[in-house]
Amino acid sequence: MKTAVIGIDIGGTNLRSALVTASGAIVEQRRSTSGIETGRDRFCSRLLASIDELREEAARRGIRVHAIGAGVPGLIGRDGLIHSSVNMRPLEGLNLGSFLEERTGLPAACGNDANIIALGEQRFGAGKGLSSFLVVTIGTGLGSGLILDNRLWTGANGFAAEFGHVTVDPQGLPCPCGNRGCLEQYCSGGAVVRAARELIPAGLLAPAPPEPGAEAVAALARQGVAGARTAFERLGRWLGIALGSLSNTLNLEAVIVGGGVAASFDLLLPGLRAELSQRCFPHIYDGLAILKTELGDDAGLLGGAALAEERLHVP
Ligand code: ADP
Ligand code: MG
Ligand code: ZN
Image (tube, rainbow, N blue to C red; front, side, top):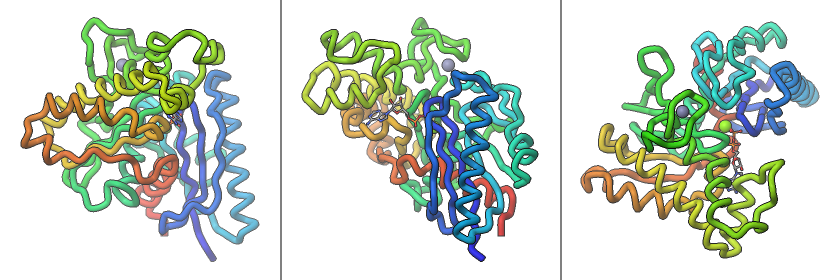
């Protein structure tokens, strides 16, 4: 009998889930908005509904589902407890691992979304063959996963690589984490829209609410609207400012850019390169590859499946 695990990628904007085979093939997937603003219960119902749909589809195809692996933004304990999630506050305090196990009867492994994406890129994507790299996922916020000497670096308490909350401007914008001037406030989907509102003539972007997404700014950039291009260039610059410090600290082989905003990788690359080349030692910059995700939106799904296989010893 064929087997699969369910990989789940939970984000402040999007909720994705998929049936993934051991070789990393996505057999079937579901996607919707996460709808976290409607609260925890509704979000959890949505999540369970997508799992049920995938299990029904698996049954139809004669596939046995072994386990669930899920990525969530924030500080996630090894046991699946969501300690902190600044962009998905209603989930804080939930033990997602126990919740999924109780409600589905399947073993479940949970971790930080970007850490899981880093595992996905290492195993199946742009990280193959690399030993030390940072994956930066730019979406609702900015997440990251750090692979050092082939291993995911999780730090003293398992919470490492919150690169979105390094300070780039000491007196800068307040961040929901409680700090000021965090990178995430300058380098995320929402940050591009905020920058674009200052840079482009009023009327070109739809008024809020609902706030248009960064894809609307990208579309304007591709039509040649200068301010929209500048908004992405600035985002790239902020990322380069923070990454310059990290690169000088760690001398990485690569940074891999993922998340929804990576669809506009070409638009942010010039700003990113400009800052990195200026701030890194040349010896360090020359050894640093700047790569776009090879897995795109599938990274979190494949990574979630990889986490489940690793932690739960799926046959
Ligand atoms: P999350 O995991 O936080 O739910 P995603 O990684 O799915 O987020 O990315 C969603 C973000 O990507 C949104 O801010 C959206 O506006 C942005 N986005 C989607 N498409 C594009 C695009 N073509 N160019 C730039 N940004 C985009
Ligand atoms: Mg995400
Ligand atoms: Zn912060």
